[in-house]
Image 1 (cartoon, one colour):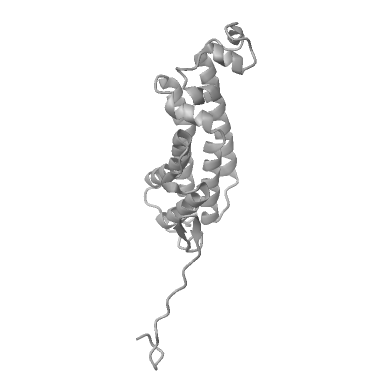
Image 2 (cartoon, helix red, strand yellow):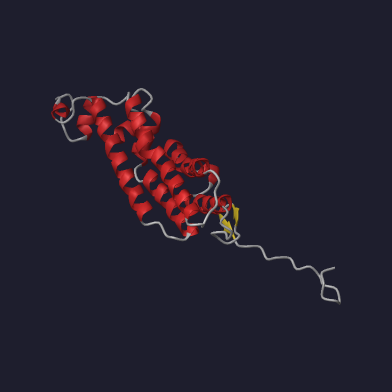
Length: 216
């Protein structure tokens, strides 16, 4: 999968895969383990989906009861899952256009699962009277689209969305999600993002008071 990520699936030969795996190039030894180059790709996809599903299930099972703390666990869990192996993610996003069955499997096993689990969590919070979200599915779609954008962009280009480091992006997502869900208290201090890091909270400006103790 590393070769596919570096050179592209179509540009990687079977001989190159054999050499990378410690075999003799052109020996045909790869075919003792896989029927074709596509079978190598399919196995990489299968392993990525299985690892992602296991990580997601573990995250969901251990979500805190507090909605704000749960948002943080969701954000960090999704980021960890999607960035654990960016080389494979790059292949999944870039090279599966000609492999519709595998692409559908990725969507159903990874991306759709993320949206579904978020919607289920929102519905559960509604049932416990902790949230009152009118359309959990639509809300989950919007929030998770925003969250997954950073790892997708980073895997494809190596760039950070908006120039924000992963940690700053997560904090902004948690804060925005909390407000969108109607969670009243923000999940972080009122920091202002500036080049080079977070700027400390700005002190409030006190209005001068009249002799009666009221603001002028």
